[in-house]
Image (cartoon, rainbow, N blue to C red; front, side):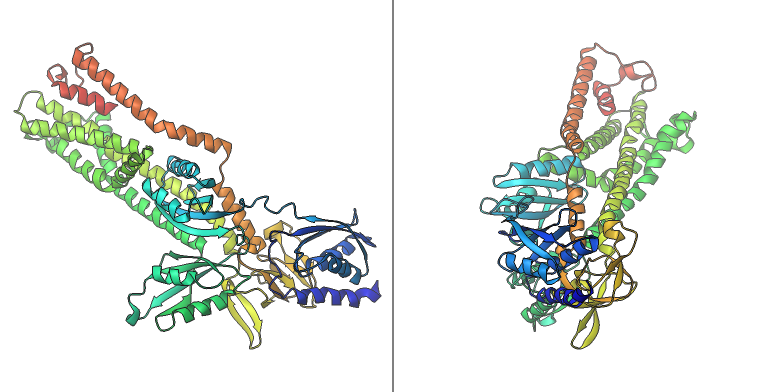
Length: 617
């Protein structure tokens, strides 16, 4: 009714003012209650929206939903901040009758949270190249004492662990991963009390010349002792990533405290680098290295392919290649030396990444595809090199040239295989880059700055420095930086398609909730900040995307189990094949076909017979 419009406006504004307390927007804490109220007098959707808006704006209320069909309101609230009588009075202030029906503990408390007494640890894992690597790390973490659950994401290069800190500390998890040959670094540690209220701030600490001994590690330890700081890590390039509780300390105040902590020792500045940008930059750097190695591997691989496969298939025999067929010493001709010179840099410079990764995999007793590549290329290279060395040190015979010519086919394996695998890794890295960019698309949709309204007028501040309770001005056509409550009287229309998919602009009035990431289509307004960091709707969506990337479907877990036994099975089959052929050749049960190596294979030494079959395997 028209005579209640003034009271409705005052009631909507009143709770909004009360919401400026630090408890406003705080996520549900342990011990939260759920109240079910019967609301009489609602006749349409506008009535239920009014009741929902008033209840949602009441201090201490976490969530409120009102149904006009059932005439019921479900409210989640903190009994330490507000009471059931206050909720009833808020509904009656806008002209409706409210009757309590039920009050109980919040059934959602702890549904997705970690068990009591546990911490959630996020670790950055370096050195994982395939699903076998991530599976190895995941199985290791799951077997550790005190670990409730563990998930490892190859795309994110992250491990997410929930463990009992009394039995397994984050440093112990890091050491366990490093013991099996991977690099590990603790990124974030959160407890059940601080898991919901969390935001991130990046700061750069530049020591003065007189304080050159001040290291980033020391700065990190000193920042961790500041009130409200949940964790601090050193992140490239040369800056600190602080995780703090926005309900305890604001971003600007925290930056001031850091400046006072290092006053006279270093200059502290805000850094715009985000965690998503760090991950994206690291992956782009890895792609740059892969592109460089691939560019260096393709020319020698193509040359070897043409000399040993392409030209012979077109009828150009290696014995009739002009100056390449000229003998050098004891049957070793220029053709074999050219192939050796082309294969050597690829084997030891470009292929070094496979050999080092294979060594680490064997050290942790979990062979992967790097082991197969390293074994295959090293077998072909060293066997062929051994044949050339044999020809150089042995007296020249009619068959020494045929032995040296056989090495060309085995030298071919190394450069071509390394180039093909690098191409596959590069294509895989491009696919991972698309997945990482999908996670950065949501945070990148937020504006970089916000217009802060203060006693000194309006000023633009970085979005990361917005604090709870700040009053922000949203212009028409601009995006909303964080979640808050509209506190201006003028009506505004918000495009919420990014969050809800609704293409039609939604009208917003005083007391309505405005979500970060939405666009103010028309009107412009003032808003009071109630949520920042991971508490915002967009921040929670980013967390869900990250959790979805880290989770594994049943098919993927089956593929991981197959990959675990694939490499050992291939190596075992290769060893069995080699042993059987070696026994058959040495025992005389099998003779190498005539013309296998220029028609002189009958008189070739036994080690050349066995070596040729071993290299083929």
